[in-house]
Image 1 (cartoon, rainbow, N blue to C red):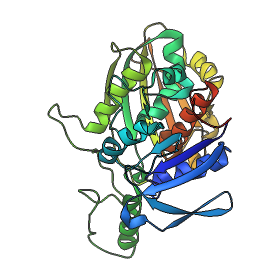
Image 2: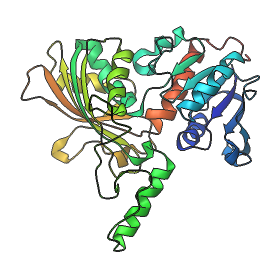
Image 3: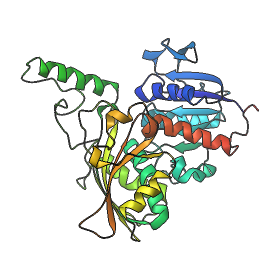
Image 4: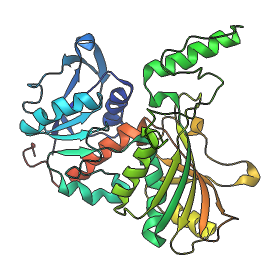
Length: 342
């Protein structure tokens, strides 16, 4: 079966990664539309040896389209996803627009792939920091149940977009050249050689939106609202790849060795955990790779029913483009594209 595919937000960092991921995984595209705003119309992107021109995103863009991979911002998804569904397409949305909608499945295929069966035209892709964590903790929850999660993230600037990457690089060059201060356009403070405990806007409870995404999305994907979750999300001057320090308190006792073996057998996970040889995951290693990497797995010395671990993944891959394409692959396996060409 081949699908007529459209990428909404095709010229953004995630849209470009979606294009690469479709090609790398040899996704069965009968045709491919690249959709973006007026300022990107006419730009050309390479796909399978040919250049495809970017078209203007309009409500009529989805005629004849089977699958829409959307990453153009929440307000754009809210406006255009209903048009795509009305035209008969299934939308896999990478924004926050539909993640907590009770009518929309929120899916990480390795953990809750069956949830795609419940779609009503739209399937949500989780937040990047949530997606990689779920791949690592999902097998633990299935084995022994999770009672509480304490998370600290170390998130790269590419999570904010191309302008943030450029700002980090520009500030770094200027400071290394001797500048005493730098201009901050994307972030409220200097990001080069700095750490900002601030991702997205602050809420009345003192948490940020990013932190509450991790709380709410984790419970929805795992299907368990009783899991206690607290997070501190931090922006670091890394260009690509998110890292997370996670403390997992389980309902039943599980040792670090058992977790190490469990995750070694888990889909989408690679364990790199040999501290005596300084072997553990880093964002540099994860860049351009599909897997979620886990290391520093150890028993929590303060809690007999908890373990600590370090989780790293390329945020533009598993945290965004890859997971979206994997959702589409899961739907293909389940024959959910009824109108597509055989």
